[in-house]
Length: 288
Image 1 (cartoon, rainbow, N blue to C red):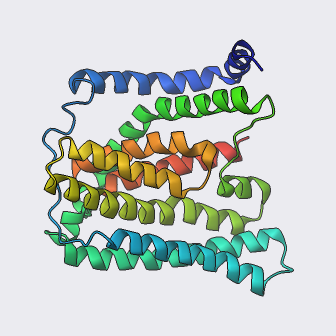
Image 2: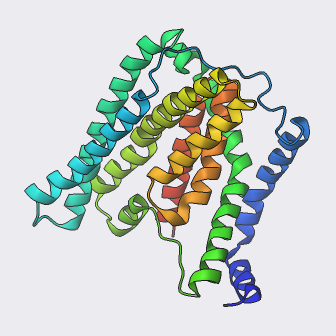
């Protein structure tokens, strides 16, 4: 396929509804760019979160989570080899959710000891829930056009390099919830994708990795340590999802969540952004 053919095909995929949805986001993003001098002043008043975290701690917890994920798949495949696919999907998500909740508890316990201000210093304060939820909605609307653009560019270059047969692979959980109509499967997927994973991943990548990286950069007196820590942790966040086609979009979304954390100091804000994004993806899949 040549460039013109690809552009025509992609243009045919864009609906009026998608354009209408993107317009408020483009407006909000434009206002943000104007007010922050193209983002240069956006985090001028952001300061590193005081902590006594060892640099290896986030990596240990990440490897532990990888172990839990591998254990979930191994357990189901070994002990329930002849079960229907929907039961395997149910059991895997159930084990992942339990393992994720266990890891969340461990992170909360550690955060109480390594952050100045304990959980509030980590960014968890129940008093800010309402404010953070509203801000998360605004942030997600603002970044949605950029995420959509990243997806379109990925498809464009994928078809340009790989040919007309290139298609974006869906996230595994979205494929499962579209394939299986059983309520138990869908409930466990929603719990895992909308509740457990956003909390776990934001605590890990934003709360621990981003904080640790910024602390190291600030100690080394790097300029723009906030944006650098956001970018580095976002690269890691996108990479661990192991879906090459989604890396650019995940990186863009992660930049938004990292910025929300640094700007507000609240970990609840990126958690809400992540949860809302996953929820809208699931709703869109079910409505197809």
